[in-house]
Image (cartoon, rainbow, N blue to C red; front, top):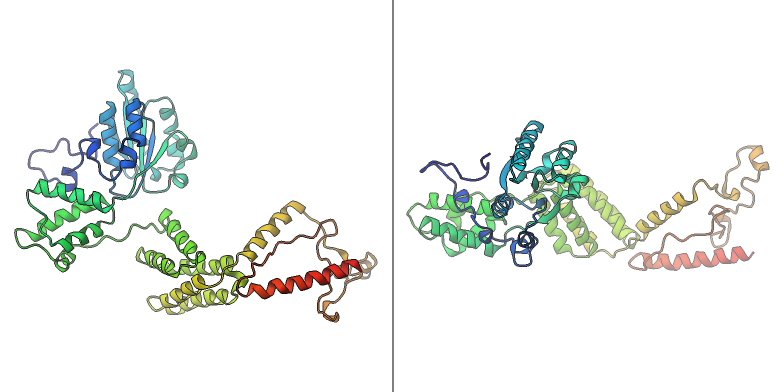
Length: 436
């Protein structure tokens, strides 16, 4: 089967994109993935040992997943067969496995490259297992999504996950220089425009070469393009962000941890990144309410009110004005004193509730609306706290079969400082009450 992703078989003079024309022919020509292909890289060690295991390549678009897979087949003398989960189904998989078994019977191995492997459902992914286990194919899957979430655990356990990185500026510059060599002339842009072009690529090598090709077409044989002229000719790609995938969770995690870490500038950056990626601001607003309660709590009780009002303000105003209250809230939360004491108290109390089962409350705090319940001791000995001089009776409210627990431990930061003092005062009253 011909390589669906290579330029082989093209007639002379047939159209060929620059990115395809410059596709590396040797592993040493691949840029930006030295952590895998360098002297100590995992792939380099596999090739030197002559043992190529099944692999899942995880990385953003345009960083070389397909190219590396094709070159690995070349290096290991395996037949390269490629399918895409977008266009293929069970019938195509069955045919690919049949061809691989035929090759194996003739002493030839197969590297089966599956692009967008995460798009196959769990049952389809299960279909790979016997062929990977028996060595009928060496599987190389490519995905832009986190394999831990998207790849069947059984299949994942039979593959090595290798992470490919977005291309940094030096690697993108190398690609531009290769394009200039192929075109036989320098890229027709001013130095500042060249820097802007590298920024526009956002770490995607294929997109970088597509931009370069557009620049050559737009500029023609004229003068070097300025930043403004190039920006007019080219459209900057939207930042890589999947509102339902890992990018969604990575960026909200970054925003949350920046708020928790009291860094309003970093928090505002991640907020802006999510907005630029097309995230629903209502999702961010809901998470801000969580942050206010989980990470600030009673250290600043106004944080919860600010978060709730910011969410309501966005619902009333919409975009773009409604984003201002959300930004206001983010700064408030990031600069507020922090306490997770209430959050931890909930976790500890739920753990205790699971461990203690169905223990009854002590009878003295049970209501007794019927005579029979009074006869059984319901409400006996209950002290109405408001009738005491301190306003606190000091009675025990835990089940009689359970020792007293402390779940809420205030930090003493912000508004929790007086709470520490108040709790000590109540603890002393409780101790006196216990002594009688």
